Length: 397
Image (cartoon, rainbow, N blue to C red; front, side, top):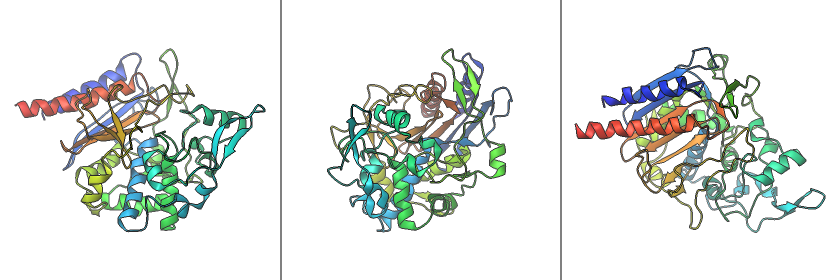
């Protein structure tokens, strides 16, 4: 694909040099055999010119698919029943109640859920959990009742009320953090240890962890805040915690883009890695299929804390389902991504997709808040489009 490098390099150059710009970006594309594009441009911290392929990013919610993989492994081994109460494996989830609103004095109105949360519901984001930056009730719980932010990495941040009865609808939230707790209950180990043994080792992934080494810290990109005027400010004091109280399966990993490409390749290769198999082919086959029960569907994410997220949605107007644990587009996207492909995103404007039919996948990493950045998000879509344009040109040649 002779056009691939030129097409992708042009996107990276534009988003780091235009005004407004992104501080820096790393973007990569892989096929089933290996990386076919890798590019970096701009800064780790505004003005330093140091962005490179070995830059470490807080990958936020692109952690979710890795945590989901560890749960799928438990299912394969007969250790996890997706439809059993999740409290069987993570007892603390059984203590949580549903919030129905707030009384006149501002205290939350709570009741017992009508049914137990299952791990299947957690994997599909129908368990009843949300995020304070996407949900007004959680935002109020944070502001008035001290509910900690998930970026704190604390147990209290996930031991929150349910927003609705389990299974009632799709709402994006801390469900996969609880999947991590289910896996820990089954394995008797921290989630980071489970990932290292059962995902990272077979895939040869080393530059990725919940807690950074000193070397990783030295290569970590700074998260930047986008001002209303489009300007960027380094958030030098803001980072996901190393040595967190809980290994957050929903968002807690640090890693480089080349390491994540190894994970994407595993999904392209039916669960196989260079040092061993991570998942069985038949598991991969069902795990990538949309599994929401109509009328449940993936919806727009409403940004209720403007400093953390804008209103955000992939491919507005097109159908989107959820699998174990990826978004699945049910129609061909404007980028060229076909129906049935999978992908997702991370809060600081990182994005990935996996197209098993075409045998390609890619990752775009920036470190900017709020989510749905008006430069990075369209830049990612241009990057993905550039890949499909190169594929089309190669087929036509």
